[in-house]
Image 1 (cartoon, rainbow, N blue to C red):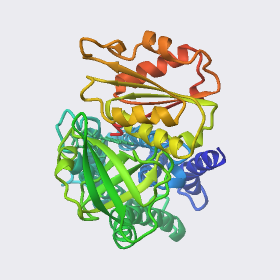
Image 2: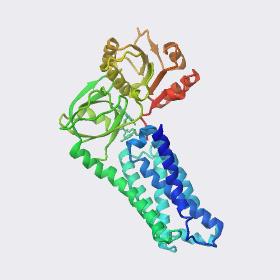
Image 3: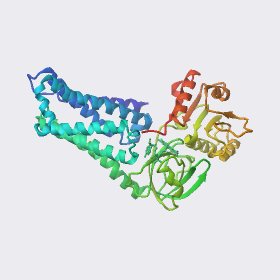
Image 4: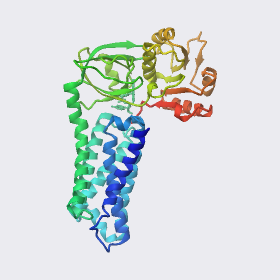
Length: 435
Ligand SMILES: Cc1cc2nc3c(=O)[nH]c(=O)nc-3n(C[C@H](O)[C@H](O)[C@H](O)COP(=O)(O)OP(=O)(O)OC[C@H]3O[C@@H](n4cnc5c(N)ncnc54)[C@H](O)[C@@H]3O)c2cc1C
């Protein structure tokens, strides 16, 4: 909680301080209010853009209090606010003095305005390709790579614009603040894309030891630590996985499905749903692997409770499996209800192991099948409020709820739980579609 407040305070300081420092004398005087106002917006927007580099750098101390999905949501929203603020900056300048419209023409403008134009162009590309990535059918890896390139180009060109325009940076230390901030943000990208992977390759590499087929087009990928102490994680967390080279663009997040007690041998349950996940079945033992993790706040250990309700749809079962395997290993006596929805009985991944876990845990298992077999006696269809009503424990307070599955299911379950009086703080969601 304290670190949550710390990051909010730091965020406000980072947003406001650089703009406030511009007011320290010497400042230009006698210029129209709207010109000054638009400059303040420009600097404010640029600071916000710089903050986006920090948000996506996956600093665990920053992401842990909120969860990485919340941080990415924040990134998305703040970046749009920053873009809007930055667009207002030239707009106000042009309305204030229409003769400045000529600066929009790169041929008739000066270098300061050309860098500004290029920076805005990069920001627009970033905004459009992010908002409409799926509609534009952009491959995720190439989108992510281009996102980094355009973000670096945007901030470097914005910095060149600020330096060349020379307004409010006419004294060495004001100039230095912006140059240092921009260099630090570019440095963060280099750290994330080059330095961190190089460190992972030399100190924290893994090897695929087995790929085990499961039901429902799902494979368990098993990694063994390659000469190091392994990775300490909490049940329910996830890691970004790279197979092959540490510098590959293909990096995908997967929840640990193994028990948190096993640090040197990690398991991931992966469903073949797209171009990367469909290749898992062909991965050969011995293939080098690299992990960036652990990440995420979807963990039972963070939310102690008298009992738990886990609600999984499809491959959303993987973090629940880690919960249950960890609880079984720890001889945890607390009661658990698991509602597990999928298409049919044959494709219900890990069901044999779940049945076995019932013998070790105080576990009630409820399967909800969309296409049940003819003799099916259990729940069928979707996880509706009625299904929840029939299967949730009568006493809901002091329980914590963990939900992971398709987006519509998660939203519906979340709303139903709130309607039934469960506190928002006791409902934890893991969204597999981060981007
Ligand atoms: C926190 C978290 C935990 C997850 N845990 C599991 C798990 O345990 N088992 C499992 O099978 N799946 C899990 N996923 C989903 C898994 O990451 C995606 O299914 C996988 O990345 C899709 O890649 P693809 O190339 O096969 O599919 P594609 O068809 O290329 O992508 C489908 C969609 O998945 C998303 N996606 C693709 N690549 C990435 C990426 N590199 N990073 C983030 N999102 C991406 C995009 O929204 C994309 O539109 C998890 C996702 C998250 C965010």
